[in-house]
Amino acid sequence: EVQLVESGGGLVQPGRSLRLSCAASGFSFDDYAMHWVRQAPGKGLEWVSGISWNSDSTGYADSVKGRFTISRDNAKNSLYLQMNSLRAEDTALYYCAKGDCSSTSCQAGYWGQGTLVTVSS
Amino acid sequence: QSVLTQPPSASGTPGQRVTISCSGSSSNIGSNTVSWYQQLPGTAPKLLIYSNNQRPSGVPDRFSGSKSGTSASLAISGLQSEDEADYYCAAWDDSLNGWVFGGGTKLTVL
Image (cartoon, rainbow over all chains, first blue to last red; front, side, top):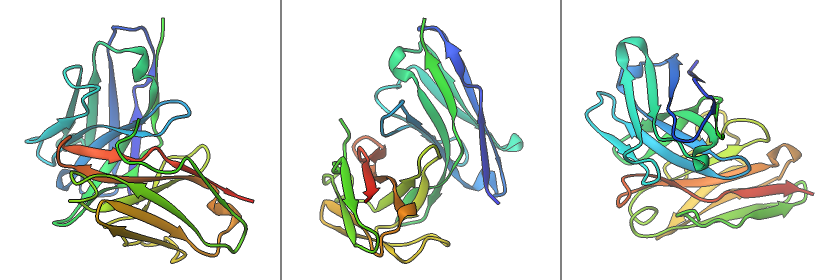
């Protein structure tokens, strides 16, 4: 059974940093791209960042580019999101998602339960 | 404002068929496949439809998807009370080089 468990969220002041983690199990982690998707309170889904299976390729939403860094450790079956210079608008539930991709399609096949990040003074 | 456009709400009575639309552009829906996600209240999103019209194992065949040009739609037939949820469409965007989502449609079963 695929399991994705996020951790590291919490209350942080504007301008500070936070590192999110996602522990994966139940599949061959190093075969899949992974993503972070966030959901602000009462709002819709927003893709934040993605990383290829071997970390060769990463991508970021314009809203976080230059402030967030995605990384992974395949030996530990773990995905990370380093968030710097946090802003109030980064307040959201952050989901880790498994990228199920083929030659013709790519979708978030499995999602974790999310970790809440609140940016406030 | 979301890149993909969905109606904010939809409704139907038990047993009815409802459809939810999703409109995009040539850089996303027009050139890539569409997926749909169901988010029940207080839970994480779940993949409902992928590759425009494919259902993952375990998703009832009451749910179906289609795509034409730069638009897509999700149809739910034989509506049930447990279908009450938020539904999101998504597609890879070649310009943004990431996934884009619709704003979500809140489905109410009357």
